[in-house]
Length: 423
Image (cartoon, one colour):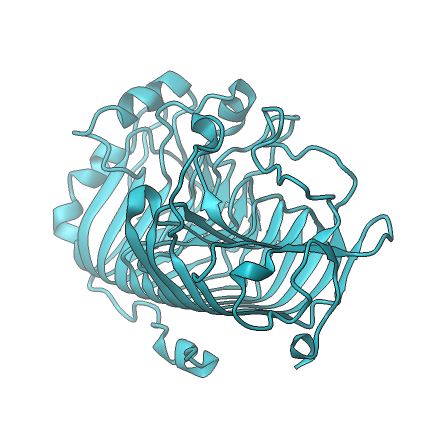
């Protein structure tokens, strides 16, 4: 059964109510401001506020591992800047004594990460444009790990992150709201792998965020349980994603995830599920509801044949196993399919990595499944999806892989809704 929305909302924490001391992070022009903060973190790891002052532009030229915090507020009122030199960051990321996997690493209990609502302050500048222009994907840093039990992320603003933004993997009872991610390229270069939120945690609510990026707007990976992603705006990326799951034959599990009331503009995918051939585990009770599409190439896309396109063509495999799907619902989709034939920014090969053999570009639904692996997968109220060119909408679906009515005639052909599709 799906966890009721009211149950999600009853789980969310409140802001850190009080703290006994405040550390104002010092700044020296032309120097790295990280060491001064790290030197005192042990004294401010509980019942404290760590304040980056408004009006100050800080140099965060080396990563910050905040350690294990208890009842702490990190307040980003000033601006923070990564190093501007690519080689400097690459050398740091290659050094495991300095880099823990994230440039900002926050763990603990009862932690608030709070930004600034003023337009000119509270920005975290990753200087990602030069990386995108150079198509440099070597030793890129992940941005923020927020592995917290009982936490808040609000009003944070990330500008041109080099790659991945927020990770909530392993977090529990966290609410992230009113945050802004702008990985917007000023050139024809594409902001590769600038995923918005990774939500592989438990009891998470991510709502009322603005996310302009070049990969998954949100991705629920292994371990995601009781996750609500709602009332968000997503532009430029790769969809509302489950996965990828089952890489290397692993058993991965995702349960009770809801994406609802989301605008998807200029995305490659709308709703997306991806698992690897040969994987195991289960994705159950997953819902995409009230999704508005604006120029999206693949509105609903499910594949159990995912592979790493960066390592070459699809591998030959005789395996017929993959992560199982159970109680999967796509409900109330409307908007337009980008059937213009234009190439999406991540396409650097021929054919493109997202090429689907036999697809016309007019499909509202693609189910790429193995027999006996999907139970109760349904699309309903999706007849509001249209093509930009005004031609009839199509679907791709192999009837031998479906054990119940999916809400439309399962065929490689026109979209024809069934009574289940109107329930």
